[in-house]
Image (tube, rainbow, N blue to C red; front, top):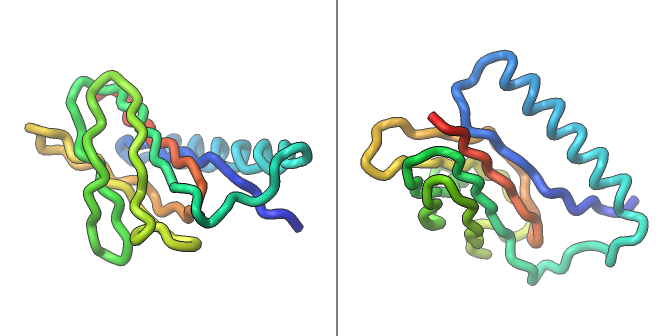
Length: 133
């Protein structure tokens, strides 16, 4: 069975039942679509490909983005407000299959947003969407 190369999406928002259901349905559709589209692909991603976080910051505040693995926090960079930013996850953090959470810490603000846990592999593109506050 071929491995699916999936673009994953995590949404930062206050957790409520509707948000959890929306994220769950969205991830299921995303995985199903990625697996269905594997037919003409180039195969499995290389372990040398970088793992990238694409941050869609729809809020006004700039955010410092961290990856958290086994209670250790790694700073990935800054996502400017009202823009999209691509950050590379270091191979020391994402070697092989890794389970991570992401933290968006507003610069000059008080509210931290923490994503759900997500499993990533080398070559994945993780999409984080930060909605406007």
